[in-house]
Length: 248
Image (tube, rainbow, N blue to C red; front, side, top):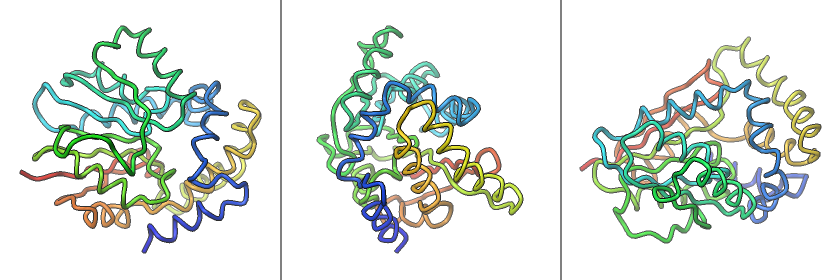
């Protein structure tokens, strides 16, 4: 299975950043994380995060869970776009959460957004307690992706949706070649120079290339219990938004 292969890739990562302690890597790069994201994506990550909101369930008053919330970019973007009554952001990195809480407070959203420590594979929330769950650029950092997907399905109310934004590889061979060159050489160089953590960005490059995408990932979502799963490539397939539906 694709998930089993990916688990081995993370466990055997030569830099030693296995999933068991990957959150420590994010603690280290937290001070420069937002800056590096903007530089490496040419600010496209901001546009992609806005696209995530367009895939939420219809209607207003939604309760949202944002996994691997990091510094809070996704959950803040979702609240600002409207239709969400309350949100919880969950992450395992205390340093990322600390910066996220600062951003939430600066935006005046503390009454609406709660930032909490937690593991995507073992969520401490009741069944059917959220209308939507999102995770942006975080699912590939989970060894047991199947468990995380199952937990996402469990906490969704009937009619709810999981919306997952993740990097992928373009289908066009020319674009794919250029993108792979960027991932292998430019991303580790720029990320390492700005953050000072060369190992972190070599790790991130490896996980992007190894992670199952497209049909392989939607099949994993269906195996986890989503009745319907669809992939929406963005920007030539450099990233993909996956939508899993918990049908009533």
